[in-house]
Length: 75
Image (cartoon, rainbow, N blue to C red; front, side, top):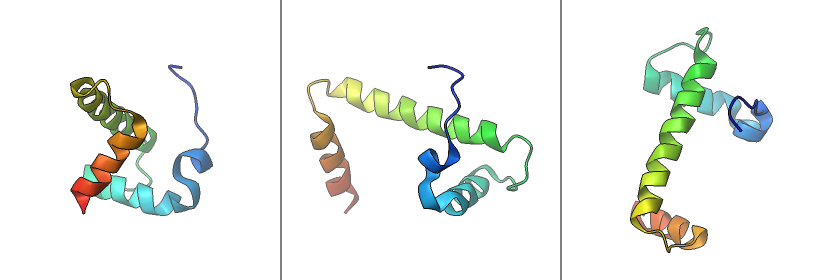
């Protein structure tokens, strides 16, 4: 689905300002930066790449077990 637009509400829910704020701090940009959408896409793409690498290490794990393990490791 390359090039597909995703609605802001679907992506951020009621927390648009919070997520955009965190991204701006992370990338040291301002919320009015003309390339903000590119940074959002870059961040999502990087996260998906990291998830893919982790899933490749354990191809037999299901989604629930994967998330449960991540939650338990963060506690």
